[in-house]
Image (cartoon, rainbow, N blue to C red; front, side):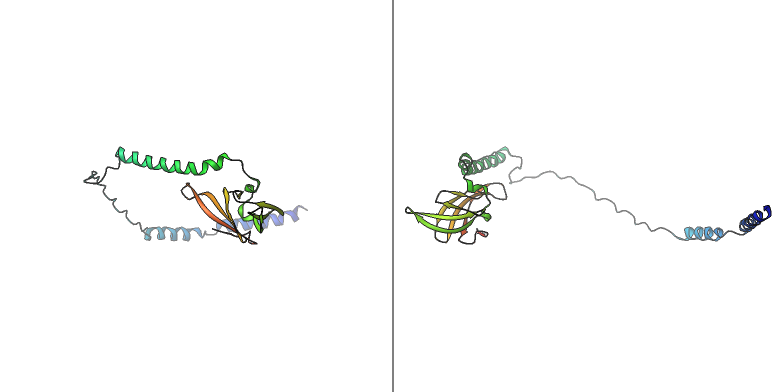
Length: 185
C-alpha cells in the first residue's frame, strides 16, 4: 500500500525538480525593459515664463472718483426713494384681510359667465367645482389681483407682482370666458 502512495509523490517531486532546473523567461523580459528605458526619452514641454505685473497708479483726470462720498449718498437716496415707492404699492395689500379666492392660483380660476345684478356687473367664476360671484373691487389669485373691470367675455385684473430685481410692480391681467386655464398678460 505504501508503494501505491509513493508513486504519485515521486512523480510530483520529479516534475518540480525539472521545473526548477529549467531556464527562466524573465531574463529576456528584464533585458527588453532595460533597453526600452534606455532608448525612450520623455517629452516634457517647458513652462512659459509668467507675465510681469506692473502696478499702475489711478489717474482720474476729469472723471469722478469712484470712492467719492457724494456718489454713494446719491445712490443711497435713489435706492431709498424706490423702496418707499414699492412699500406704498404693497403696504395696503398687506394690511387688508384676504378674500377666499386669493388662496387659489389664477390659472385654476375659470370664468363661466357674467350677469348684471342690481345694475352692477357680476362675473361667475368656478374654482374647485364651486361657483362664486365676484364684483368690481373683489380679489382673485395669489398676486393681489384686484378686479378692475368685468365685461360679458372677460374679467380685467390689476395684479401686484415682484419683477426680476425684487421691486413690486403693477401688471394687468385678463381672465377670459371659458378659458380659465389660460391667462393673457
